[in-house]
Image (cartoon, rainbow, N blue to C red; front, top):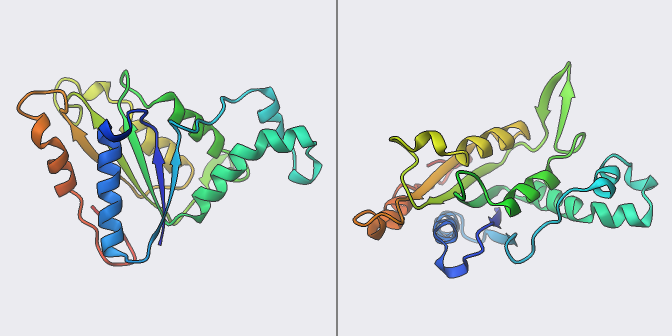
Length: 206
């Protein structure tokens, strides 16, 4: 099994989303020995923001691209190839100002390509990245899964929507939350990891 590990937190070893993602990957590797892991660290190697040259390259057939357009499309082409080669995608997603880090948004902008990762059929969108299992390793200082702050969580709903649009509808959000709350923070990561159960079957589940 091929696992794509997408890191978006810049906090390295102190990051709870990275710790949670690593824990999920360890469970996947235990359940599926011999699995390979490709890590895409968006914090250390961020994707460039979209600009005119990149957008033009996206809509130009590869055979017709100029050398400049080929370079402009390289990040997107590489990211999509990694995505398509993966069986499981683990996305580390800390909640920053109620949303995802800008580095993760840039990666999404590069993998969302009309005619490649989605298309329209009879005026309805059809995702083309199918047959994948996605785990979102979400971290937050507060509690956003329920209670008064739940309406401020724009991480899980957004990722579920945009990944589903691209065809990745089997998305499980695993939360390590309350990491800034005394009395909660000490057991938050353990609680999150204990909620992850990998089934040794054709379909992965939590």
